[in-house]
Image (cartoon, rainbow, N blue to C red; front, side, top):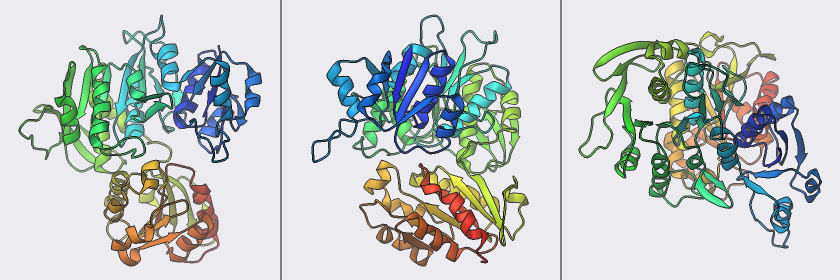
Length: 496
């Protein structure tokens, strides 16, 4: 069929477009505010893009309009619809459905090729854990398909169909299972559409303040996901999370295995026991199943959060027959995900060193600029803490962040930011578009925090405080105005 995707440049919808194209469908799409890496991926696939959501796109006459959750019925004070194409689709009675519904009905559970879906859910780490799991399965020769909200460096694309193999009863498909709502006409979380057989529940905190009233509302959505898993399926649950203990406590009809750090102590009334645990520091730790020590993982990925991501991926892969030894071998070769502490470049005096130098081998004279997707206070904190442990206490870390997510724009978590930024020597906040006082919120950091209202002003502010050997981490869930390249260009002529 010919599908026209509204909101095609989001990570989920862009991945869906790639899968649809690979399945033989004709794919076109539209969006506003396009930025890499998704724009690059769509261009490479030869998918025709239209800028905006104008009515002229009706002339394409697709068989179906697939609607992303960026689309709404929003109308300006003057009565002008923000998405006129959607208004015409409704007015003319043209066929449409949400992205998650199309994915489920036309791919994951289409007649004749039912997939074994492995879903990765959680407030944090979905993209990284999905990438780990897909790479483990690939390394084991199982040729999984996947749809991930980022670009895994081991694959260099965010989505693909499963390959042909006789090693599994059903083709395997790894999906990043988002709890955000499906579409303006379907307010259920996206993940209820996927009907997985293996589910990772990685963590659960309050987020998405624009659509959820409180943590309990999100817990109910996670339990809706639990209800969709068959009895032969398996849930891999972070036993350290009280919120997930409550979710499983609402009822569980599948196998359930818990994972945790060695230091975790089970509490009375816990619904999830610990079957998997790990011991040792983040870069060199042992994996245990029950009372049996199985394997040891030495790798370059930092942070306790990534230890837990790895353990969850190992446990999920085990459900489809991959040994822990195979998983460890794969993770030793895991290259992380684009925009997860991705080194964008290094500046030495007046020259940019763009060669792939790792922070551990970099000259102390170089200023390193990283890109990271963290946008929730917990993700900001764990990422910075991981970098601090890697670099040591004497290194200078500068955090440049943009409160861009709907939750952060609302200011729901502004009080958590000073603690989240403790591992940074200096923090710089981009305040453009905020309706709350960032300077006031960051006051507990004193002179260690600064604000700027605009990208150019922010670049100048950061450059004025940069010293030789600094590590600058830019954090946003958007394009951040191309700040990474602008910083590198500015610093190339800046003698600290």
